[in-house]
Length: 74
Image (cartoon, rainbow, N blue to C red; front, side, top):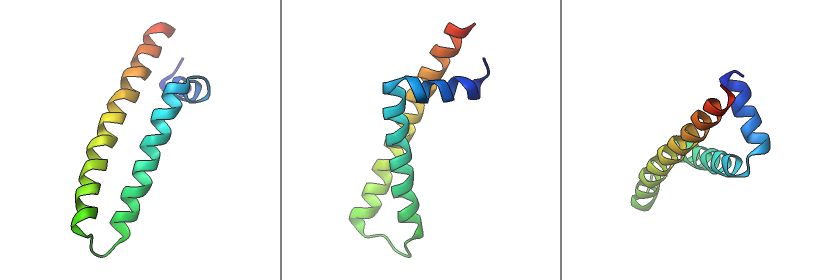
């Protein structure tokens, strides 16, 4: 099974993967809203930094799940 097929299958059938992916997308949308602003308040800057770190952490978790699933498929 190819990587994209594994990802699609995980999103449809793995509750934990879907939860993490949805949260990652939510953070991405919030960060895009921040980018569209001309200026950020101090609190928004802190929140943007926190969300970027959390988004990276979630991406790492997604990658672990994908790799584990791909090993099972071999």
